Image (cartoon, rainbow, N blue to C red; front, side, top):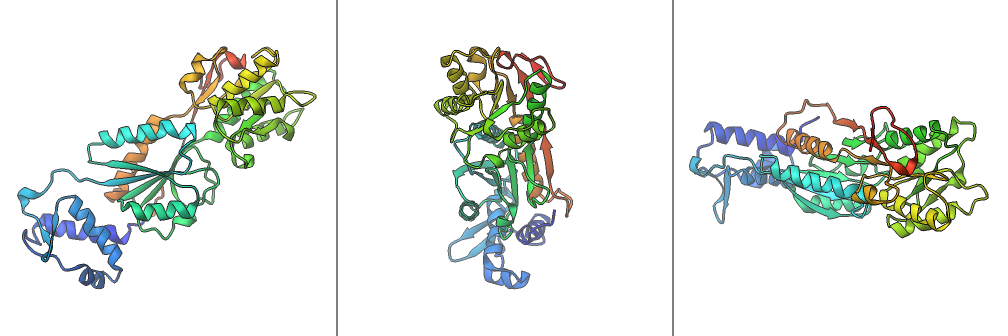
Length: 360
């Protein structure tokens, strides 16, 4: 990955200070002078000197400028500030990952800290990044986001979460392969004798959801094909919204014999709708969720679901951001990581164990 200019300035000044080439007590050139020297803007220089100050290498003295600190004043650890921006803070799939990122940030041993904020559009996220004033930003976006909107931002950006980057996606990412998990779930249901799994999603743009695409692709290769009327948007994540969506599916003359839900909470609502309609789960309809939330084990029947590797994702993200900031990554080598999700089979699907997954 190409080193950004403010990082080069920071690294050059840091080496000069640590080596003693710039002695303690010396005043560094001003922002304007450094900007002219490096042929860049004052904002870029400010980002570099802010890192030096956070590390305790310099101190900004009123009326005196930026003074190199005495050796006794230097901190033994480097402290960074990482911005965490979650585009859809209400999504249950994001909550666990945010908790793990907070945990690994606190335990990283490099002084990393994290802040969270919610934004809706790409332009809003880009604006939020500039306000944070961080050394790097981690973004948990909604489906369909493009990295090109952030190309002009002069700080390292890492995208994560469960969205599905296309081949044209230009940003760094460490994501869970949600499409693959839903596809394996759909195929497993089909191989277990279910004819055509339905899908209950969360958004108005169902075609952007990996669960929708997975059910479509798995169904198209079967005798019964993919049936668009078997896909419904719940319009959110609440249990009652899942119940309403399931009731809509049951209005079909021939209702599906399996339903894949985008979240465990929607699946809980679907179970409730089936119970009220006098249908047995999994006898008449197999139901699956996603998220492996606490509710998945408490339901009756217990819920077959998909588990995301939040702990591993968070650890890899924090390590990657640290490597970016410290220049340990090879220039021109973008980060491209997709992690596998785990299928956890319980009673609600009425199916057996699949390769690489668990039966509980």
